[in-house]
Length: 402
Image (cartoon, rainbow, N blue to C red):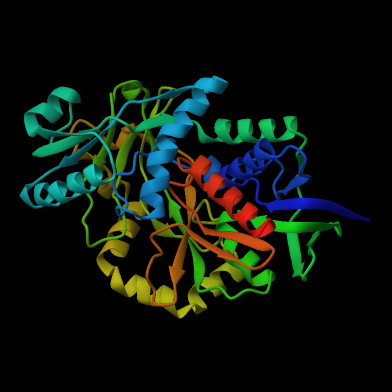
């Protein structure tokens, strides 16, 4: 039996459910379904991240990431007020350790201002006053950043979607997509078929596969990067007053390890960024042969690694050696010791890499007549989930009623 819908959304993460809810919020008469291969919402990138409400410090002015992060930072706080979801606006301290980093910091502060953020420049002494135990040559403070539990937000989107009449199908992996001039047919691994007027995919770690499955060309491939964290011992619970971030090297693709208080009181440090050998490779021993072959046979992967040899080596070293990881942390907070680092679940970032071996920096969408694919939506997609969802809803209405 075919199930018939106006819109089907594949992917039950925070972007998928934000989109689904906003579709029905705009038109409650639409028949909308979400298909998710896991048993609950937000099981991958949504539920395995640092728990930060980003403000938009790092993104190129004028980019979708910059605009949607800024809008999303404010929108999500309003959403949390309305739905009694706890969050804290701690602000972010970005600190420089030496003269070279202080030079980089000035450019980053200028970018933050261009993105509409409130920037307070700080001396080393002022940094230490704001956060005891932290050493730095200089820094700046962005008040808009905060902390939150993103899976709670995702669950609320799903709840609101269902209250408006939306339907959710869990434990269903999409195995085939066929588009014609009237409908799109989706087939899942249990043999169920769905007919829909329009299809939207928000499939994160598997976005390129859904694009290919629908018959479209993919000018990129998802390369999974595992972000490994540690949880600091209980003596650091409620110790950090703000998010603490390093000044990133503008020539490298990674931010470096940072200190993140969580709404539940504990603090994590990390992540580093290690290429995983499985799309859902949350540990070193999780290896998927199909995923590994796709990664290693994609020549741009090697171009990317060659272009970032030193960063790749440093990230790998931090993953293998706890002593090296601790030294990175002690550069900022000397009191931290090896025994303060406790295990914590890793995340996997779905990073789109183009055919030149370059990381695709902005959000990316690919569409056909009846399909819209959200292709590259790593961080700050959670922060940006409301404006991204609105963008997708606007695109649907443009396509549906053109």
